Length: 266
Ligand SMILES: [Zn+2]
Image 1 (cartoon, rainbow, N blue to C red):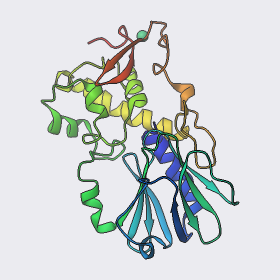
Image 2: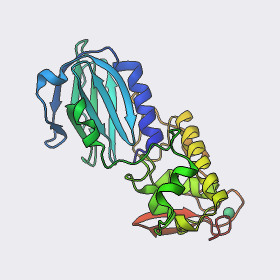
Image 3: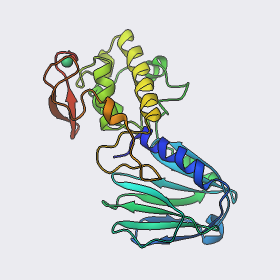
């Protein structure tokens, strides 16, 4: 599933190919993919910018509307310059006036494309937590807001209403690198550990963005290339940790959690 670094990579790629292009049509091939609360005249407009919020891709338009894409589990945006046949799992296409287009390919069909007025944005994102790469996300922010949280740190970090953009792979990697056991409660963490946790989140996400994300199964860039952070994973999908200890795999909050019980003691 694409997480913050993969979504940021798609945003960076899209900036290179769709800014200043005019959308002429959005076509849907799988009902439910497009959730448009506006009409054609609102989204047939010039692309001004592409941004990210959590795991959402925001395509900002001159018309004061914006298109919001969520890739969910298997969604991919692929930029094409020539007219090609539909892919087996192609759910929608966004066409531009120079005959280029974006394919929205999605095997599992959970991905969505919304179009709304910019004024609706605060409401749309009202339940989305802080951006982990923002300056506001600090040790103090966690301490001030979540000092009494008793859920496992693993579950807390995956909660998009608390911190936006982290998913299973990066949370496993962050906890290993910060030497924190995934079942530790946030309130049990010492100030030093909490500081290290925040630093590690920022570090791992930044490194993964530099690597253009992690490609394990479906994730691809806009030009169909893969990311390379999978080469730097230390625990996710591994059998032994970098220090040679056996990795344990345990379901926490319904998600497979990889950790080293020796390096990450509770
Ligand atoms: Zn270890």
